[in-house]
Image: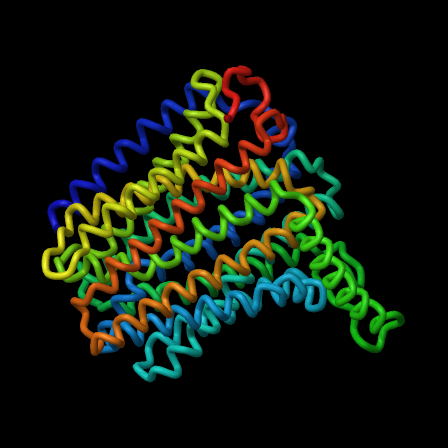
Length: 481
């Protein structure tokens, strides 16, 4: 497995370079007013410096989380409970993460993210189980803030303060997504360097994340503070104190806006069958990914691969998938996002079907499991841009945040139920690590992915002649029936 991992990362990085060059040739960068606007470029740079540091700190914690818990001699069933605590806290904190920026201010909430995630990382120094549970709860809060607050600050400044065109917003997040893939691959390599090559142990990447988060917080305080210097009391970076006129009214209206936003999101979800089907696809597909995040380490680690390199391989496969999406939907190949989504779900189903047999107790086949994991990550790279395009078309922009929050509720609940079922099966076999729980879990995930495929087929049967679900400028024979 050691040689396989190193060969895989070389091949995958070469594939990504080749696909990037192909994508640039088929979809050349266009000169836009945003690129030529120096004020916008500076504003975008101020945002991306802090945001990418936050993402980097988040990725550093991915490769060795499970390994760290095993290093502390916890059983797989105990580790499953730790993961469930993290997912459950995401469910609990998701509504709060949308409300906090309105009360504390967007910039202050980003600082809260830096503090809570730093505290989460520092809890990894403890071997006490309840301290680690506290760390997972803080991690759930931090993840919820990362996925909402930074974007909220940027969009508010972009639209309300600078009055830049809304059409420029996707360009910034496309650039962030491109960098995000590279950061994920690099995080695996750096984590492997610290934990294995330098023999600092699995806690080292978590400790490195702390100064990264401190730098992120410093940029939020200084660069973002300078960006917000022109705001008056009660502006973007500030909340109104209780003693100011209408201070209490502002707080009450924030709660009212939050309640109304939740109600409107739920009504949009229930009134449009396309939105409900898309939410079902997201809940099923992404809950499987959370279970995969838990299972990949115990499947491969007994066979001695460098976990940081394996993590980089998985992230490079995901990057290759996103580049394939760009190539497939170019004007040369004319594939619609709906076609790509169907392909991604089928690939994920096939990889999980493979894992059901390659993780059979008593006869594990780690090379086949590794290949299946890479295929699953490739499917993820295809899935996320496709589903993001469709969400942008079927969900009204003003209701998107609240609808996506409702999507995440069943997503996290399904993942929690799956991990609790795995915990129950492992505990039922006396905590044995060689039981059949892993294979059964992958089998259940394959069934969930099959259900996701049926939801995709229903979505495009329902919208067979729906131009909202198609890219403009492509041929009519690409109908999704």
